[in-house]
Every structure is written in C-alpha cells, then in structure tokens.
Image (cartoon, rainbow, N blue to C red; front, side, top):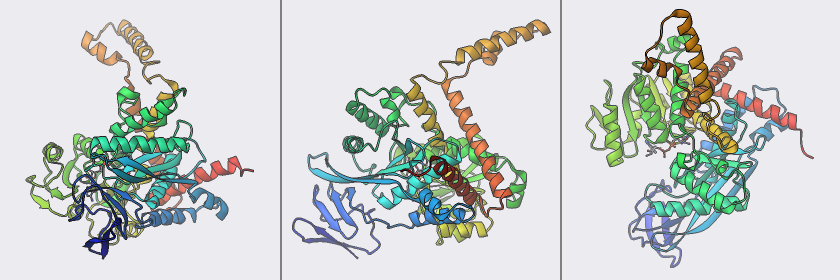
Length: 528
Ligand code: NAD
C-alpha cells in the first residue's frame, strides 16, 4: 500500500493500493496547493482538490523500459566484432542533468517541479531529441529514450547524438499559463548548464508537448542569448511564424506511413505473413490519437487502408468492416475521449482494442504496451512501432516467435527527427529550401516544355502548362526528402536483416546503429 502523508503535519491523508503509481489523479481530502509525500515520491497538488499536476522525485528505475533497450543493445552488440570497451562507450549515457525548480501555480502557490535532460552520445553534436511532459517521466525513462535517439539518428544518417528531456507535469490537466511558466523556467535551467543550444543540444516535441512549447523554448533561449546568430536553431518543431518548417507537425506520422509502405511492398515478406503487397485494403488498429497516431492513421486512411480499431485513454472502438475514421476523429477532438462513439464494439479498457484482429497494429502512445502479459493475444500480422519502446524485450520475443513482423521504433518513427534536421539546417542558413531554387526549376521546365512544343508542334493549354512547370514549394522538398530517407533506410535495414542472417529487423537496426557510432568513436580516438 502507498501511504500519503502531509509533509507539513505528517498526518496520514490517504492510503492507496500497492500498485498506485504517479498516475494518481484523485486523492480525496487533499488540500489544494499542498505538497504530499508518498513512497512513490513527492506529489505537488494544485490547483483543485485532489488534482496532481506535477510529480517531484519519482522513484527511478520503475519500469523495465531501460532494461529492454539495454537487452536489445546487448543482443545486437554480440553480433559485432567490436571490443567490450568500445561497446561500453557506445552504450553509456554521456551526461544527465536533473533539475528541480519552483514554479507558481495558477493560484500563486509555489510548486516544485522536476525535469531531466539526458545526452546519450556526444559522438556527433549537437545532440537531438524530444521533450516529454508526463507524470510518468523518470530519469531512467529519459536515459533510455535518449539512447534510442542515438541509434535512430545513426540509422537514418543524421549527424546528431541522441538526447531526450522530460518534465514531470501533467500537460492535460495543467493550464496553458502553468505549462508556459514550466517550459520557460526549464529552458532557462538548460541554458544555464549549456544543455541547450544550436551547437550542443536541440530539443523537439514529444509526448505531451507540441509547437506551442517549442515556441516558448525558442523565445526564452533567444531572450537569454540575444547576441547569438542562430537562436532559432536551438529547438525544432516550432510554429511556422517562429521559423519552423512546413511538414514538421505531421512528419513522424508521415514517416510511419512511408516506412509501412516500404515494408508492405516486399512480396516475399508479405507472402510469409499471408498478406498481399500494398497499403490499400489493409486493416489497421492504432493506439493513441495524438500527433503521431493521428497523422499515421490519417495517411494510411487516405491511401486506402481500413482503420478498424482505435485505442485512447479511457476506451477503445473497433469495427472489422472499418470505422468511420473522420467521425471518430471529430468525436475525439470534441470530447477528448472515445467513450460515447457508436461503433460495432466499444471497450472500456483501451488495451483490449490492441488484441483484436487486424493486419497492422500501430502502438503510438507510450512504452511497454505489448509485454509478456498480452503479446500472446496480439492478432496482428505486423506490429509497427510508431511510439518509442511500445514492445518490451519479452513481448518482442513472443511476437517474433509467433511469426509477427515488428517494424522497430528505431527506424519507423525517425520521420520526426529527420524533418527536425531539415528545420535545423534551415535555421542555420536563414533561408527556406524553395527560395534559392524553386524559380530556377520552374524556368528550366518552361524552357524544356517550349522546346518540346516546338519539336512536336503541339502545345499544352495554360492550366496544364502551369501544372507541369510549377516550381516546388518548401513542403515538396521536405516530403520528398523524408520519403527518400525512409525508403533508403528500410532497404538498408532489410538488407542487413536478410544478408547478415539477423533474427529480426530490430536487431538489424541496433546492429547498424551500433556500427555507425562505434566507427565514429574509433575515428575520433580517445581524448586525451
Ligand atoms: P501525444 O501526446 O501527441 O499523443 C499521445 C496520445 O496517446 C494521447 O492522445 C494520449 O491520450 C494517448 N495515450 C496515452 N496513453 C494511452 C494508452 N494507454 N492507450 C491509448 N492511448 C493512450 O504524443 P506523440 O507526440 O504522438 O508521441 C507518441 C509516441 O511517439 C511517444 O512514444 C513519443 O516518444 C513517440 N514519438 C513522437 C515524436 C513526435 O514528433 N511527436 C517523434 C518520434 C517518436
């Protein structure tokens, strides 16, 4: 059991079940604005009775997530010929910054918030990785996520070391004002320790954060570094008004779509699963209708897939014939829950949705969603990891033994960081990708067309001509470069899987990432 105690009076306030985690949302008899101590750590309660909005000092190493990442690493590392010392260097997390800072809640009370930034690898700089706002954030989780970023960037050929940040607040129950104060103060603390900056560490959105938080980070960084030439390159995923890049918002979901499209284009792999090639007609279940889940599902839906199941916090819906996807999205956007949506099947427990029949299951919420507990009941043919770490090590073994193809997170959700790379380059060069060559491409096409018309004696009407000769926009460059990155990376990955006789795509992905980082370390040598 968890005993909740008022730290000021030491009076016992509540006794909660043993499995109570920081997800505690309602603790009766709790006064607003008070700090509480539990054996799960300190909880700050504010602004209403019983609402936990920030978690201070969560217990580290609660989950098996870090262990899973470590085991995945070890399995792939054992297939390399690198010496143990070098592999240790590749595996270790270079720096972790843990910070507690005070913030005023909406009633003017002081709340102490805990945040982290982990820089897993400095073999390439800057480090790159998202910032997560969640009551479940721990140092252990942030370090594991940062490690995934290192191998992910190496896999898709981005010149970054991996990083990740996290702040223990509940972004959904806290007000925009509170989130802004937390984001700005957290940024200021990172600036003070040089844990953010265009050349050292460049955050981006992750679970619970988006363009608004990135705008606050950019503005705070700029205010504290007024003489810097590239202040907006300190963070990516910014709104367009603050020098963001078109396509970043949907980039991770679009990358998931491109990755799945590549995977299902291989006839022999699909035949092994009893599937035909192509997206059209494939049945899909998605867990999480946030940034990544929504966009991935939407691109698949537009390409002709049937979205048969969706799981969200508080419930799930399923219809083997295909859900009214736009209808579900409209309902979710209005009510922030799927409860009340009329579907063939409705589940109170969202996890049940994952166990329904489908061709492709896309976990796009959080880690450790498919474990030894439920992996045996998954009916999908392909599990496409849009979230980071949604399948743990034991769950992964069960899925692979059952012949289910897992497309690993290291590869599949790399679209976000890929387009972040483009945004960072744009911010460093202070020019958009279309500005320098769109007009040139357009006039080249005009000349080519005029020559063809002269040779053939036939001409296009003005509307057709304008369509054919139009110069590319910045979004066109972003999408085609993302599509190329995902296609080339998949072929590389599949090639390693098949030619090096790897047990699965995930091991191939770790193997490739480890190899790239190890080579970089060897080229640098060891200082001093
Ligand atoms: P988000 O906050 O926009 O959305 C997550 C959604 O998942 C929310 O709607 C939430 O209600 C839902 N959810 C949470 N727990 C759930 C559960 N148990 N069952 C069903 N739904 C649940 O977050 P996001 O940015 O979409 O990130 C999702 C995942 O993708 C995370 O693992 C993140 O690390 C990863 N990721 C995100 C990006 C990015 O660019 N945002 C890039 C790469 C990887």
